[in-house]
Amino acid sequence: MRRRSFLPLLALSVVLGLAPALPSFAASTPAAAPLPHRTLILGDSITQDGRYVSFLEYYLYRSALSDTWDVISIGLSGETVSGLSEAGHPSPRPCVLDRLDAALAAVRPTRVLACYGMNDGVYHPSSPERRTAYVRGLTTLRDRVRAAGATLVLITPPIFDPLPIADRLAKPDATSFGYRTPFAGYDGVLTEFADEALRLRAPGVDVIDLHREMLAALAERRRTDPAFSFSADGIHPGGLGHLIMARAIAQGLGLNLPSAAAEDELRRIEADPRFKLIHQRRALRSEAWLPFVGYTRERAFKSASVKATEVVVARLGEELIRLGQP
Image (cartoon, rainbow, N blue to C red; front, side, top):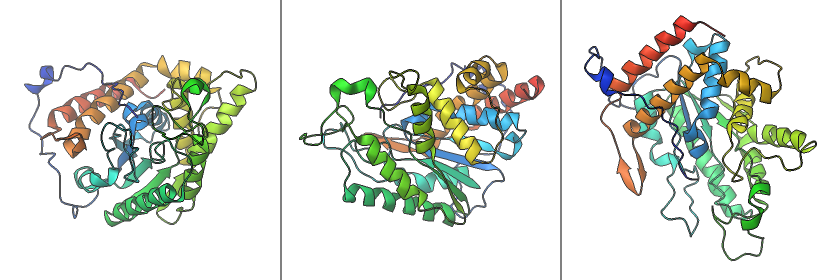
């Protein structure tokens, strides 16, 4: 999936000269103790887009739980947990396992949320080999998160909707499949992946079945609007889709949510100045921590510090406190 940037236009240069002395945010060793309440969120371009993370943080704030959820979200476009890439992809897809140890060492989370699967079937029909690679990747992720002293919440993949891109779908007997020409029945592959993730539920590993929640939400809307879709390209949800994702995850985490229709809730949240601050803060932090942890997409990306960003994040948090809870 292609990367879509939602970084707010914050002028860091304004604060660099005003920043007080802070401790270094350099990556610590894997043996360092997890930081209380620190939450790491991993995923592909839907997570890098980050709107569902911003909505989730808003719900945490509404529930007076934001102090116990210090969220750092570093989704990466095109990423997999399986390590697979389709033949026609411009370059090998990044694999989260290649940056996982660095992320765990730098962020030191007590909990990790991970949402993978959309890219892991590489837009092909179902195959035992790709399903095995997906499960192997999830179990490796699980084992490394446990070894770092954190709990894991797996989130099953969002849905693939063939309706908006019917003119470029590939049939089962096609000679090639990929992001640009996905298999028409690819959502069935994602349902298989969701089932595999659910089998990994165990002490210290929770699984939230986002996939079926989104399928149900889509079916409900299609009853009155057969042309409805959460996504213009069949893959990346728009604002309503991200809110549906956040609501499913929040409920899976045990939060009590308002009973309003999602469409009404979306309008209300987006008009709330507190959400705008939360979204701005989340986006700024994501954009800074992603290269600080480090990643590779055709070439390696690595930054030296998140110190200046954390100064701005702290000030946005203070402004949020002044506004009070919704």
